[in-house]
Length: 145
Image (cartoon, rainbow, N blue to C red; front, side, top):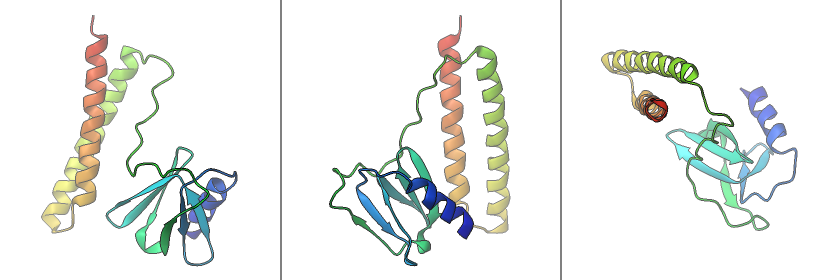
């Protein structure tokens, strides 16, 4: 875990950026980020289009950096548009993959609920998979002859 965070810090802090927030990890490590948001017990840090998710307890505090530009909105960034038009076969394959994933997450969520475990994370993952499936279905409809 420490190695992963250290590698991410090195990767994200390699080039100077006009970031808007300074994140202090409490053990002398810090980094600048463009935006951040909390998701349960996780903090999502975004810099130059790269997202790093760390446990909330790992972060001592976040402060706005004076040298940075106006802070960006705290929200998810939409995925970049594909560079090429996906073929119908690729879309069908993606649809099958997403549907299998959706079923696995649904089964995991159901089993966790029966065991009395928290299901918030699985619920978010399930909704995200549903959104991905809807997007693929819409793309397939657009390509329909």
